Length: 263
Image (cartoon, rainbow, N blue to C red; front, side, top):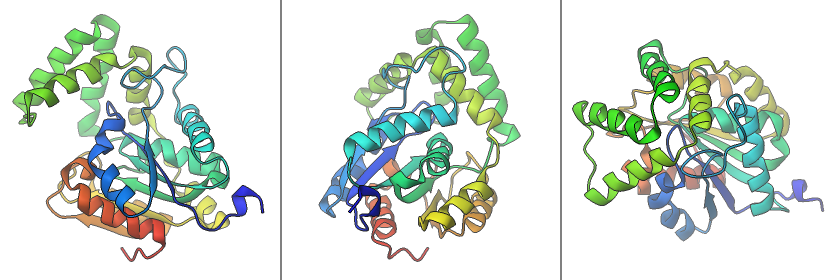
């Protein structure tokens, strides 16, 4: 039997979002492993110290998806994987589903959208791109941290604060510029993805924090409808369910992976 014909799989690949990293999934790894899943979380190329793919323009959604596909083939060489993409990672995993559907057992999109972030969020991304042209990464972090704290962000500990600083500064500037560009210009490929899901029998789900403000909730609901996927709204959760409610997130993912998801 060819590996792509294996009906039951137990491997999960978790893809982080913009300025995120594999550590965003730390709290959900244990609950998923305890349910019997073999899980890997990764840094995207150029993210958190991972080697970039090249200079500016090298980190398109398709190029990042190919890198994730390479990891999936290494991690599960004879099986398909359950694919989870958070935020910008939703756009990357969508490209993987479209370009490499034979690798995918299921696809879960978490707090992501069908295309660019809404206009209200775009000035910050343009400002970041300008800073990447004019300032070193440590100075950009100081500016970002000051704005984040003024907006109400407060790290739970000094250790977390130091980690966030190290992680951001370790981002490759070219990859970070390209990531911002992806969030500004991503095409709506929802219908194309829906066709691939249907053609290959790949189940999908959309997970949204009820307090998420990255993409409008109405847009995430519409995306789920167009994909023919159940839509989970997690009460009291903002933009990152894996850190805010890891047990609840593991419950949802487990149901998706087992095919018992009812939305």
